[in-house]
Length: 131
Image (tube, rainbow, N blue to C red):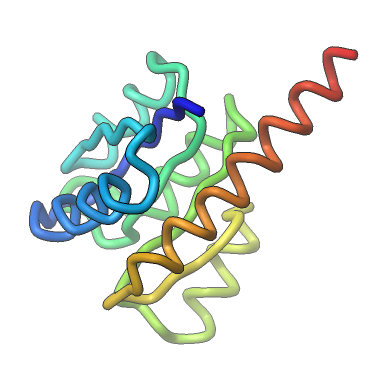
């Protein structure tokens, strides 16, 4: 199944690691990326995406703000991928309607498995809505 995933992350090494994980474990997934929050929001509006992987520490605006802005127009699954491990950060992300939260460094197979589960659930729900 072809899916399109947007990674909003300013560290190119992380983007490369995520892309490699998908190339190995889910090669049909197409990975797009943005190194800034505002551009990521625009890409989420313009692209037909199946998932967003979002860092909280971005150079232009907070990842929380990106999450809020995307939630204004989309219910697409959003996974937070960040170094922030404080309970307050995790709770705030879920309060802002993140679907999942992974702390860096991440395990590649686990990341892909979580994304796959969210994407399939999202797609199944969308199909049910149209029945």
